[in-house]
Amino acid sequence: MIIKFSVNGAWQMYDDVDSIRVKRITDATPEVFNGDVIDFTTEEPPAVGSERIWIRFMNSKQFAESEIIAYSPVYLMNNNGKTIETI
Image 1 (cartoon, rainbow, N blue to C red):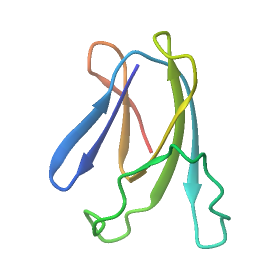
Image 2: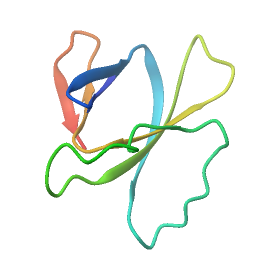
Image 3: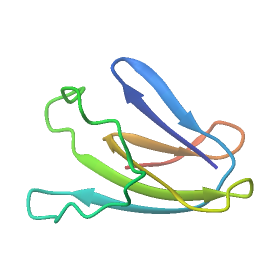
Image 4: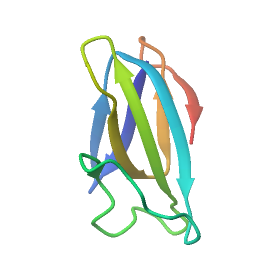
């Protein structure tokens, strides 16, 4: 599975994802994240109404989970690059 989202007009992708956990971040969400979280939401949102999405994922090459925060939409794609879900 592939995770794909936009960062400042460029595409950011993570490949070979085996497991994923997703949560929408709201103003009421306490921001308690792993210290190694990569926050891609430090710039302005790409579109009006974009939400912040927290994603924790792992692939077969990792020994620990990775955490990122990105603006929606986030695309989950199969290994052939076809979108299977939009978050």
